[in-house]
Amino acid sequence: MTTTRQAQNARFQAGSGCYVCRVCGHNTRSTGGDGASVKLCDNCFELAGEDNHISDNGTIYGSKAGVTQMLATLDKRSGVGTAQRCFPQVCKAAEYGLSTPRLVIDYLKCREEGFGVTESIRTAVSLNPEVTKVQAMAELAAAGCNPATVRIQYANSRRIDAEMAAELAA
Image 1 (cartoon, rainbow, N blue to C red):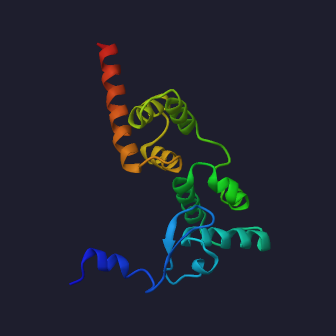
Image 2: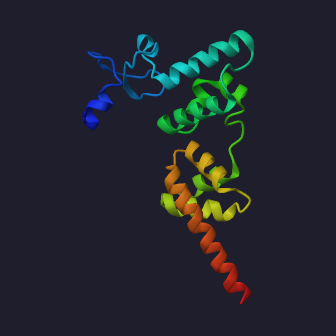
Image 3: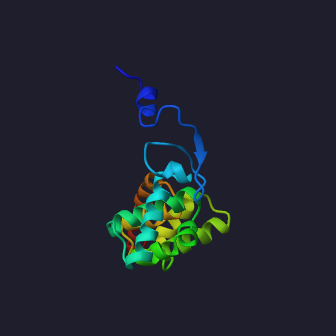
């Protein structure tokens, strides 16, 4: 029986050292893929491949949802706007980040005003009643929020809004 640490290390190539990805700054090590030879993490290496394919053919070769997830991962690791700055052609082809969702704008305004993360999420969700839980999780995760925190605060916001509506109706 292997320990958790042994199982985790089994993914990495023996003897490979750590390096910092040249795009996102993520500490990583060789997993046997091609990214290590150019000092890119697997995510950024795949995005670079998409960028190259777009330059050659004008379209992405992966699924739009998969590419969007990779771009969101890059933004989560290195801050909102990193994907747009590093891979603008891929963002355009995947229709990622072309306009900042209203929910994210409201969240960022709350953070700038000094509100905490959870309060900012609740306020942004309350200001945008048309946003679904799945949509809120995706949009705020792309802005760097923990999806579990968004899910919980989304439910809290909807509960508080319902309680306030019931009080006003009474």
